[in-house]
Every structure is written in structure tokens, then in C-alpha cells.
Image (cartoon, rainbow, N blue to C red; front, top):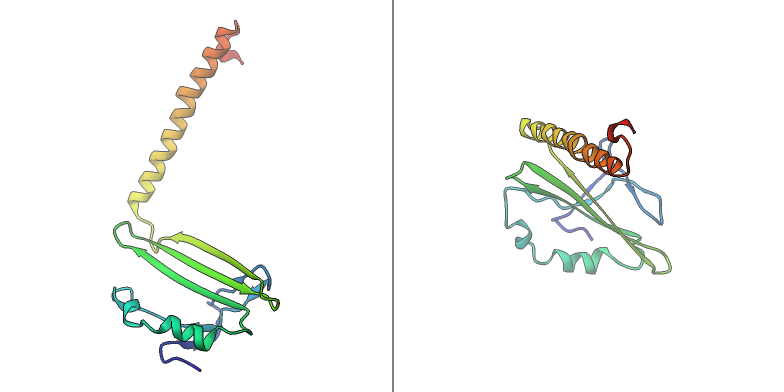
Length: 148
């Protein structure tokens, strides 16, 4: 059975393979349910999807089920790719795994400035506080602080 909501997509060169624990590589082909990021109520419109998947798609021959989401945070300009995989062995053992990867579509100048500020703060911390504290500790033991 194929739901009108789900469409089969064959693997292409741009489709990433999925790496599991039981079966090492799964192709990127499979059924896809796409929702627009602009439509906030898209999942609420399809209340019967989980029941359809349970009744027609997942059975005793199912070996792998993946739910992959792309979450958007428009305020910070970032995205999160989240893939939740369930592998099922022929004996019925279940191996769940997940991959969560944050990413940005474009690099902003604010992020570059923030990275440079972090680097400067780390260098200042090392030079000013750690070197000073270490030299004072050596001087308290009667040694020349900056000589060691």
C-alpha cells in the first residue's frame, strides 16, 4: 500500500547513505513525506499518518525505520538536521540510534567576529592568568617564577 502522502524517492548521487549498527550501509532511497517549513500546521493536518505507517508500512519484515527532520531557528539563522533510526534484526532485537547535526546555510560576519573574540579571550586567559598564577606558585617555592 502506498499513501498519497508518501512518495518513493530513488537514491541519487546527492542522496546521503545511512550508516547503521546492524546493517552497515543503507541507501538513501525510501518513502518521503515532505512538509513546507512555512506551514506551521502541516503535521496537525495529517492525524492518521502514524496509524497508516503502523498498519501498512511497519511489519515483521521491516528492518529499518528512519525519521529525519530539519529544524529551523530563524532567529539565530541556524538549522538542525536530526535523524532517528531504528534497526530491527530478524530475531526482533531493536537497535535505536540518532544523529543530530547543527548547520548554517551561510556564514555571517557576526559569527566570525564572535569566533575572533573567543580566541582573543582564550589567549588572554592563558597569558594573563595561567602564566601569572604559575609564576607566583613557583616563586612561593623559592624559584624564579618566569625562569621555569
